[in-house]
Length: 193
Image (tube, rainbow, N blue to C red; front, side, top):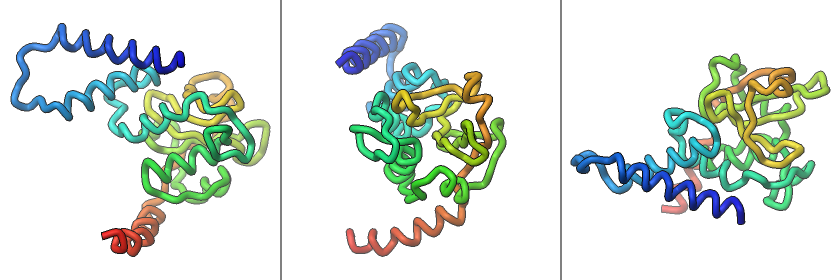
């Protein structure tokens, strides 16, 4: 309930602020563009990510809908979810890619990248109290990432001492895997038409 009240209050404050500062609308302004801009402003404030980093609204909306979901090892629903199931569902619903279920297996599907090369939607891998990958999250921008932590689905910072200590690598899903997923979806899409 607090989340809804906070969201409503923040949304209306953004609307009022924009109404006060906006001059006569230009021809380039469209209702859809304005709504998208408001959504980006709202989500960037909630997630503490720069507006310029919120280009994928589908990604940010998905994360927002799951924030606060409790952690449950092996879980994959809103009653409880673990980090790899959260990542798998996000990639399926946001990017239409069916990735593996285990963080170590997911790492085999990516091109490893350095922390300073991360882009919105990339994956972040951690070795927490382990020699092998034991945690995964989705990079949002401004060194922030979404993940299912022991405290539930949350947004954390890679600059946090804990996550900085255990950060292993970033990863970007291989283009070859994306092409395979697209090819596998084509027969299904043809049946829908």
